[in-house]
Image (tube, rainbow over all chains, first blue to last red; front, side, top):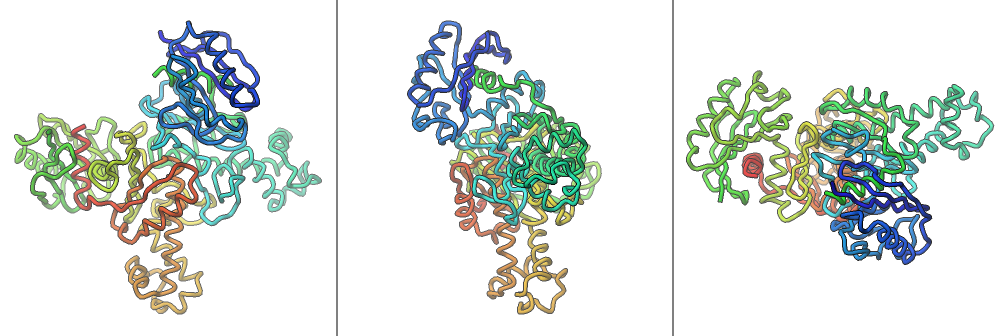
Length: 303
Length: 303
């Protein structure tokens, strides 16, 4: 069975290990801090590859940002990675095939191959963190669009009347309602609108200072305000997911990312199947965790 | 070069002709009325196929409704086709390969192969009629989803607060704002909200009776009310299209269907490219017209 070195290049750390064609990690997973310059990142990657060179067939890299159609470069500038990073031609790292892919697409591939989406035909993966990202694999093929930018699902608009400004500067992006930032926005708006705020454990806090942790902690304490805020957040999550279900007809939606543990996946599955016009879908929490990028990049590189 | 018999089964007529691998029609295009029972439809199709049997390699059928993954049956009941239609196994029509596909997917294939989307990598086709349908082809492959139901884009929600009921019974479907029905809804709501209605050529008409023709005629007469209604309709069209652009990263969007001649494709292209987060897209009006279903079914059957 062929093997790939999977490398996940994050804003703070680089994670790497050997992965086989089944998406199984077959070495120790190591990590190192992400250097501060593009040159140092290139050198660090070269050293990691040299360490494993004789044990592997190909190299898969997972990175934030839009990746070119040839899977050799990261085109867009990404806020957490240094200037010059988008100048790197990753194919020059070594003599073996180096395949770069966007981190959300990699996570989708990992879940499809050996995670919550294993065995399904069409897996839609939605990452819910500060923003919202996505990937879709159908019949074993990642959908990339004309230039590799597809699945920018966080920018889908869920209102058409310029109601809420997103951190990106545009209006009514799904991620301004249903991401971690979205939960903060729900809390901020709720503090102004919901009478429950006056009885909340947070009634003396400035609405602008309410955090996602406040809300999730408050739910544990059965705080009516926090429950209402959370339900509104879930409603926004639902609206985006049911649209994407009708658009992609997935048989499995995998929810991943920093906020995924808070999401009511069973409730969403029930609501989506009651409302959607296409065949039914399962909603599952991701299982590949921190290794998602590394595994997915390796699996894609091996194809 | 291989040839297919393309047959478009519509609610009122069946259109057919021979199409080659380039998507060119190479015979006379004939039509016949759609019979009233499923049995008669089956017999009619059999007779049409017999007429051309020795000249063709495969048969492609375009039909309304969701098609199974094997492309042999129409699964859903479609309002304009008789009871029992969804019981037909089209693969039993003859000894040659018979391939059935949903009409929107067929139209997308026709535009991709030999229409407004020719030469593009990822073509998103949006049909705007009474409702809204869609199809997407990327790298030559139709995106079908897990069970062949994908691209139900008309059901995408463009509001998240249950603002307007759709004819389907759900709320805030894109097609209730941006289809032909959507234009009527824009007129109805506009008549109640816009002060321009009081000065409109339609000021004595009941808002419920305003038609899409009234609005498009009124624009020709420079009626301020009609212009405002139309601009709102275009705004709703834009909101859905920019979301779909970020989701699919197409390099070409083709607008087809009964309402497509009214759509301001150049204005939409400019607005979408200013707002979208992915690489730029062209917006074009469909060119294959009434032959779209026939050509697309043939082209897909030949693949």
